[in-house]
Picture: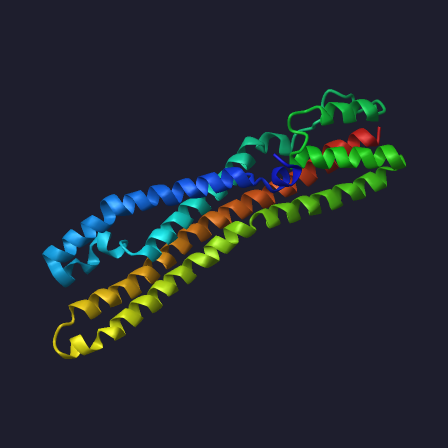
Length: 256
C-alpha cells in the first residue's frame, strides 16, 4: 500500500475496483433473479395496487445503481473506520516509552525504532518521525514543534482528500434518482393519449418510476450522510489525539 493510501486510510485502486465490480455483479444478479420477477408478478396480479410493494418500488435500473453505489460507499467508509479503530491505540501513546525522559534522547536510535515499526507510515508514526528528523537536522526544539503542526495539517488534508470519492458518490446518488424521475415523467407524458382514452395503467406505472427513484435515492443519501458524519468525527478525533500525543510525549523527550 502506498504512503498516500496509508495516510488517507483508503483502500488501494485494485481493492476498490474489485469490490465495486463484485457489488455491481451481485446486485445485478439479485435484481435479475429476484426483485424484477417479483415486481412483474405483483404488477400482473394486483395492477396499480402493487405500486407500493417493495419489489415494485426498487425494481428500476436507477434504484439498482443507487443501491450498488450505496454498498460501495459503505465499504469505503467502513474500511476507513476499521483502520481508525485498528490504529486508535497508537494515537495517544508515547511511541518512545522505552526511552528515559530524564536523559538526552538518542535521536538516531529513536528514528531507527520508529522507522522499523510496522506502523511507520500511519499518521501517528509519520508525525513523530518527521518531528524527530527536523530536530536531528536543526537541533532546535521549537523547529521540531513547528513540524508537529505542519505534519498534523498534512494528515488532515490527506484524510479530507481521501474522502473525495465518498463525497462524490453521496452527491451522485440523488442525481441518479432525479434521472429516474425525468425518465419516468417523460414516459408518462408519452402515454398521455392512452390516459385520455381511459387507460391510465401505463401512465401510472411511469409516474411510479419517477417518484420511486427519487424516494429511494434520497433515503439512501440520508443513510450515507449519517455514516459520513461518523467518519469525519472519528478522523477529526484521530488528528487531535495525534497532535496532543506529540506535544505531550515527544516534546518532553526532546527537551531532555
